[in-house]
Image 1 (cartoon, rainbow, N blue to C red):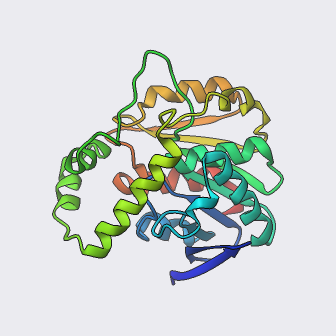
Image 2: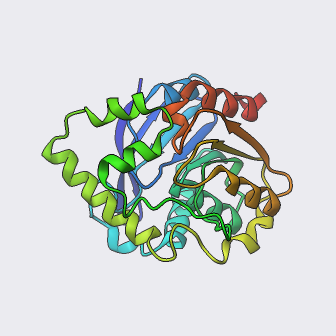
Length: 258
């Protein structure tokens, strides 16, 4: 059964979703904020202990001042892992969370069993422009995140409470702090990708309009032992748009630990 709790790292307390038993899977979310518990997480939790924390500064602006950039967030999660136990984890990061996960892994892989990056930010490919979620209007953003516009229609018709609107504004502010300039990448990350020594899987939606799937080549060039999985008919959020296929790819990658 999925649980909603609080996890303390030093002076920073964050919200945490979790379920399951076994080896730990830690999922780092993207710029939209803490995702709802879904069939994707439920599938993973049948084999693993799944933990989904809300990044500091998301959901609430408490402790946001402690995290100035993605490098700070990567160091925060190294402290997070030190206190989590027991043993190393399978780390999964989506979009912004993928960038954070990669930055973490270039610094220290000792707490990791594997790394899965889902449409990660963090790199820039010259001549291949990214989409710009900071200038897209809210409806445009939703439609550009998903290839299946029926899913976009369903999301756009969901009622939004005042609390939801406040949370979205807080998340947008924190995402801008982390990804505004330079836009969603680090000029230094590519030169340190060789330090990632754990097994690594890259998952991308072929029709991603925010970070084009052609960016996968830059990750493949930086990490020769990386395995790639491209999902057809899918945009920037594979674990929402193609949850069963995304979960299956990850579970096959994690193999015997499942």
